[in-house]
Image (cartoon, helix red, strand yellow):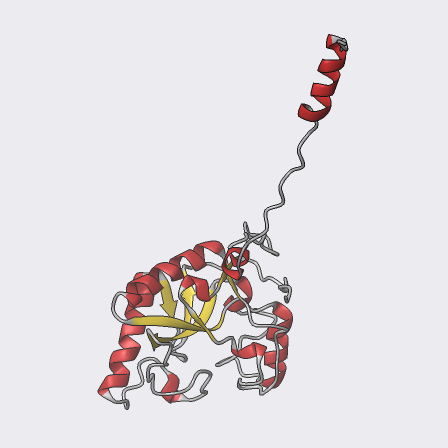
Length: 224
């Protein structure tokens, strides 16, 4: 006995099995390394700022995000380093040059919001060491940073005084220092000058990029 099946039925049955859309696969990273490589969108305006991190081969020790500073209290909500993009790019080039010589840069302070500058002035109202808020600090313009040298393992190089030391010994040209310290200060100063940064007369760690006075900024970064 022959059973006749219409061609239309064959086609319908074929489509039921072959035309059904397959579910899209869900790709899940197999390990932590793959998760870490997922791109994270910056939480700041990258046309106005650039953040420097350890991924840029810097050592970070943002002192005002801790109580380990001359006012002995935490000023910043968390430790992040921001500069204007052209300043950050210039500093990266300086750091790469120093790395070739067996050194790298350790960053103590970068962009400083104007409200933080007021706190520092309230603690030390001395224009020799802290810029008056009415005038504003170049830190608050994103053009200045405080730093030192380390070896490639992150150990600080002897610069004669600690960071934020208030006294003539911290002046870059102070003569009563060991030859080794003088050599280190000269190395840092020369590398920064070649990169377009200028020192000041009272602090060996303080450098400003370029010239001019961009507007003061009171923008404050987010914390993770």
